[in-house]
Length: 486
Image (cartoon, rainbow, N blue to C red; front, side):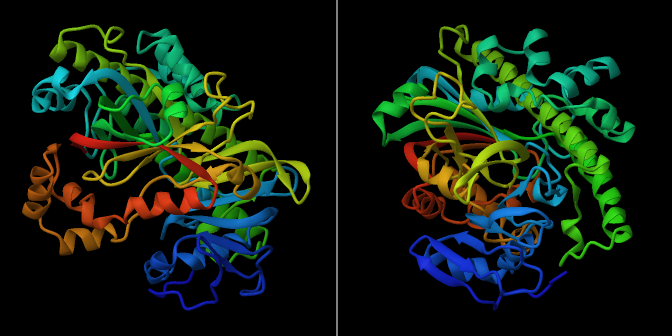
């Protein structure tokens, strides 16, 4: 494993938004590597050695197309955060490091028809949300479930939540994969993963997870915004969380098995964190099916949080969620591997696309997009930091041509969590939020420092790159007025 702190290798500028690591830069690379970034981002990207990980991913058995990273790239486990790689469905390998420990960490956007004046005192609403949506390290959900219910959740995802009163049927229509990975097989999930997941369903967790109250500040694409149900001046809610301990344990279990597989079969990889197994092997297939279960857990988790968000609004505002127009705009995953069909070197091929800290960004016409949005393209929800807020984008044809229908997933870190804790001050973070008129509720000092605005890249620059590169188009900008952090 490469541990140097700054990357000195060959990084050739293709244009203002693309940089290439040639296929011959390192032994074992099966393809080239492409990093989407501006000139101003490159020094920061080099500084944590993340380009080495993009080059390492190019060594993955069965990779097709380029190894890629989005402009929110930073150092991760095996793959960089922001990494994208597709492998051939027959000869390729699946790697947990290309998906992440928090399987289907993702973002859900809920719209309302309310203005800031309609909601009154923001603090009351945030306090109610903080009470109703458990957050923080080791947080437990409000609903107690048993083994039978967990089995159904791992198998059916959001469908279980809606059938049990946690939301509306139409929520499923605007959830990626309709909230249900069909290949899920709960028998592939360990008892330990189940035990970790049982108490945590319906909770945010800690780290970079959040619940955010925003206002639609700018609309850049009126037609698409109207289709998405977004109107300037209205209030929205963004939910960012994943599969909690259940997904983390699934990843841990299978990484251990794949490390043994790589050793026993003498697979030559530049980094043991890229441990993998052929997709068509028993181990590879078992992990994929277990990962689908983790994804289903995460969608159920966000669906239940949606229910409690609506209940919180109803209590504070005194109206029904239906009357307030509290529909889900979309729910996207950004730590997942998906079996998809894409054009590869002038022919169509079945591939498995690893998206690790990257978001699906399908353009108009793809059958996977819900009918509601198929004529305009898939919503792509990109949080920045807790001061700046969130962008809503839409998938464009460039993503289908270049990145297997993928885009960035957020601003991306410019400081590690440890560096943020060591170098930033809580009072400064609190002052920044207060000066920005953002009501903040957080349960952890360390968590607040880790997620300070200064720890993140400039999301405006990240968005500019993916839009100028033709991967996505800007639809709307959401500005925070209240934030709940774990």
